[in-house]
Length: 305
Image (cartoon, rainbow, N blue to C red; front, side, top):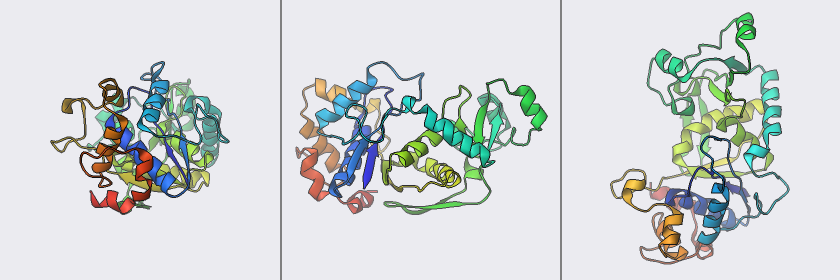
């Protein structure tokens, strides 16, 4: 087994990130597998200097370690996405050769105006209405000046996959999101492409992540198929919620690991709290991650949902 945690260095890690990291770490360690840490820093506008180092420091303070990563190296280096652009370009060439990509010149405003239903689509926007898919090649050539995005053609029909917690899931990407972006207008690989290329290249066998990313899975599976790659097993875990039942946020008080560290709270108290939230400990327990390896079972996480 090869598991991973892939934070984006756009700010401090919050308790929800920490719980997902803990679960991914426990899933790998309880099976005697390897744990990989990868930094997903392609959202250049939000990444700030020092964020990556601060996040790694927070994870180590929490008691987590990794076998491969940006600071320890490994056979699948580099472990920072901004240093892996050649791999994404190669994948885009293969997808273009397979005939599943087209150039898109639409702005977000144009897509929103043309969409007929408020589906959650590409980049958290509405479903893409297919505006540029049918453009005449001469129009594409005339308009293409390095400012186009590349979209993946979402085929008609359903995509079915198994989740180790949620069971069998069926989605229809062509209706839910439409054709989706795999390369942004700035020439940078989009999340959906980069995560597939990286997980495949790093031999990731199990992806543990928050269930807010569940809707991404069908799109990623389409890319796996088009590239002839074997997808991992998916484990979508429940999000950490506040007392009001909503996703944990700033309004619930101190939520970042850095805030807890600076206030003098010991890491064992944080780990104990996170473990109690998924039935691996009792409220008030103080534990470190290694104390939980023998207790970890996916069934306990699923039963909390």
